[in-house]
Length: 557
Image (cartoon, rainbow, N blue to C red; front, side):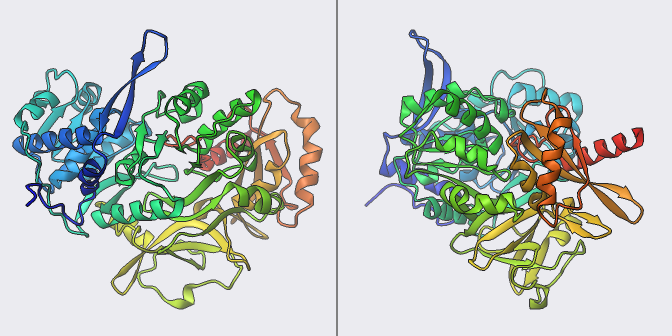
């Protein structure tokens, strides 16, 4: 008779002991820590058995210091071995981690923490110092844990927590229920104030199943995740995580040589990266003739991927390997997916002709509907909300990966959710359509559409036309107020910032004139310098900031 405790069916952390029993000596996480005698990056590591044991020890210690089932716990720790062990320990306890991008800015961080009202705060010394100085969470935080040297703020160090939790007996993790809150994940705030999406344990479990099935990920694979939160899926998928040597807050500035060396050193089979990071790596790979045959797949999310980025990154891969671009959001992921073969061979000409960006087909178990465009809340589903086939509308998603609400944001929840019986549908805030072949096409954010006197214009169908020119790095459609409507303006970021924009302008006008929907865009401007982008992925264009810039430039004329 086994002395091992039974594993709960609905706690996302249960995947870790399962993997520890199936492959105890397989590396779970490797973390770069300095250089060896030969000048190569040296790694420290945890096997699956070690990660499971360490998270058990921490879980017992967290309970001993007052972090128990349901305790909302802000976690502000850099990607590291401790980050993995702590996250799984929190899940095992049944506490609720609150995860916020540190790059969203101090004002937003304070607002998010006030909204989340965490009872515990686990962080590195710099996070604790900021918490004290900026008075984060003073009304709610009662338990403090420091990962690293604990200074004047009191509480416990992680080492003290571990000492309190020392035991060789397996930890009996919380038997959490499917709808029980597992985590609060804050959105990036790229198109507004960051909001805390409430994740249930069933949401995480459904995500793991869909990711495994959609991308045929097998136990024993090796992952190089350049976005920390995606790395947390790896233990559930049975993959080894190689934590890359990079600044996770600036993915566009990654050193390609470091990532390529990690792929070589460990035979990486799977890589996750934002379009901005892949742009940086792809430029280097194409320029130097780099190949990495161990890669089975690259997965990218965060923003639509330009065909030229796919083309460059594909030079890294074997012909049968692919770059996959899942479509989704913090509130519902994954929703749909498409691969680079489809995008480059079939969709690219249509994108350059103004069809928008192909996002493929929905993943198994997820239903996507398209409704009429409105900014008003919709309380209950009705079939007459649907648009006609081929018509552009707002994407609405139903399925097990859909989150039910935002934390303490009833107005935001009301604006984004639709009830259909017991089910909750999520309004993605994205516009698009389904073509006759069943492919989905993304046409931009609802908030970014430009309502002109002649009718609406959508960002991605317009920008795709101009992005086809090799001198254009990217473009952005914005609206300049003009009476009751807006006048469209197309802003251009050049591949070569020093290029002669005046000489390029006639060719851009000719591209626009060739398509009916872009023919009415007469205002085409050069935006000197890089476009402002989101902090999380460095990929979403901040069109709100560009619209303000264009309006200010208008006043100077």
